[in-house]
Length: 242
Length: 242
Image 1: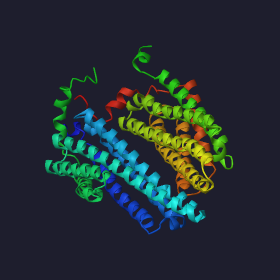
Image 2: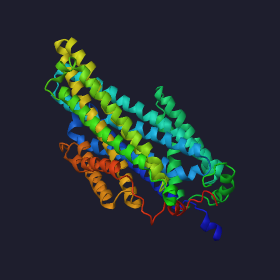
Image 3: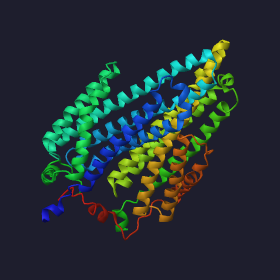
Image 4: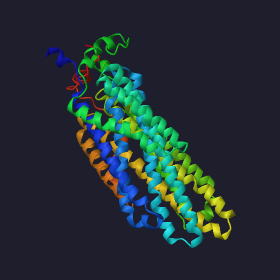
């Protein structure tokens, strides 16, 4: 017990990270359903304005996932830093960029509200303009989403490389994560080129996020990963305390 | 004097933080008024081209302001890190997101300049289209601003929470800050959902920001002798060196 008390296994961090994974999954899907139900309708410009509250709530839900994405980077920082400060800061930076592009996506979706209000006021010749502008901006939101998700792929790869190296979670989960995020990365890059594989490619990684969310809440990080840390730190030639 | 030598009270940092914060505040107000004086007039597209320099200068001032926002995150990092590394990173991360969307806001305002020059060249049929585009992009700038405000609020919460916990400033100041940012968050979410509050939600938080700037310049951070930072760091349960 004495060694256990000395070594911080970040049990609370694991639980919080797990909850953020699960919450991000639920909130993101909820926001997506809300937004799709409004923007997926044929000739959505004529109806968006009447449903602007729904769209805005969907947008706020997505903004919560933006906060969640950044929180992932911040929460994992001290855990990853014990093993590699560079990977910890790389993960945080990738998470911040990921979050920013998801918020850009939200911005392009919110633009549909004023577009719709202009559309309702517009004359016949203008309505065609506004419709093409709406199509372009919805596509722009897709690009922003795909760029954000590509960065998420990078973040996930960094995280799982660390998971694999440090055995913070069992290696088979890290391998699953590596595969899942590699597929997201390639799928999202290809969908920027127009492949349309974006949504399918996020399935294995999405399932991993749910699984690892539950895993971290139930099991936490393996304490064995922290026992070896003392040797690692002392060999890191970083005299943090003189 | 021996204790004073040991504990870094970050007196210079406090002054720089206060000055940068205050400067950012003033620049944002000046820049905003400069831009509003051009874009706030009815049918601004007809006149914006003639006054494009003023809009551009206003935009430039706000870009300096967004640099100041990131600088706050960087300047406060070592101060906050002594007490909680994660909060320090969370504050920096929120400030980065805040600054990015502040810049997006500026971009959408700067777009009015080319829109205005296109408007002057346009034939009658196109003018109403350009006006719709202008209205939409102004609305988009508002959304970007609201997203950056939400990030400002998150950053503010983290900062005031740390102020409260560490007594870097007196607790009543921290509580005022928390309350001010809570009002701002509530107002920003309402605005994204479509309510217009005429910016009254910014008053308590804005006054607090002015107050804390003056406080930091005049008084600096307070370090209570009963809570030397050495004990706090060791109680963080992060055994960096065994």
